[in-house]
Image (cartoon, rainbow, N blue to C red):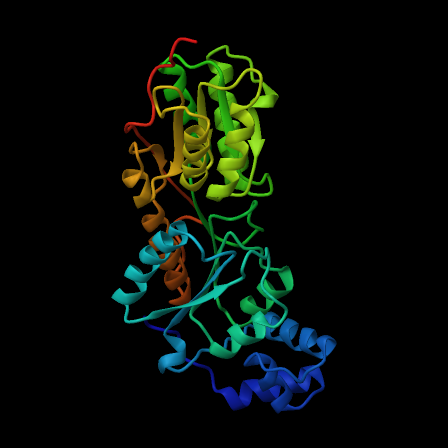
Length: 341
């Protein structure tokens, strides 16, 4: 990937150092992401670097051929599919991915930004992760682009993003169940702090409203996006006085949990309970019965985010700052008309 010519470092460092009232080595520490500089001094230098347009371009050695990716969690096939898409793009350019697993935290640990800057990546992709504004500013001061992939919330101004049509996915999943004749349709959703889950829930409600079916708040449950969450909330729904005849889950893992809850209750999928998932991970086709689910183009999403990062790193402009890839309902064997009760 071609890079802009590097400015004469000794002149630029000296100029920034003079403006900041510090030594050139201190400026070098800040530019290269090393510790040992007070927060106030670091902020002053970063502001000057940004103001004067000084850009530290790494050499063409190994450390510059990295795209950094930070995940909220790396514990599912969902993450693996995104990685595959990103890796296809970076490999085509002879580059590699650097991965950070936040192990369920919403934001990286305090020392993360210094570690990233020391590696001098071409770009950073944040997957469902919150990157603090101060960290974004430090990346921007070194002209390292930040891309939000499947962002938790609305990305801040200036941060390009890649996502999927989650609202339409929720709409199509629920509409499919309505067309089969279901009226008591439950939803096991993920945390409402995630923008994708809020959009899927809104799509579910819009489909019910369009069909003239009153939304029953008791049929909407929230759980972590894992098998255990779907199993626990699926069990609670099936034990209620008026259980649903169908369940739409916010992802395939939750849907598998609903399968388990139905099995434990002595119910059959889809004869007694229809289930729809979201993502279309490989496991959806291996489920028994094969799962009806909303396909989210995860590999394409990962590839799009990587391409955006490399495009910006090359100095080119993006055609679009906000990319939403289409979802599609994949009808398999886990949905059927409701049984007479």
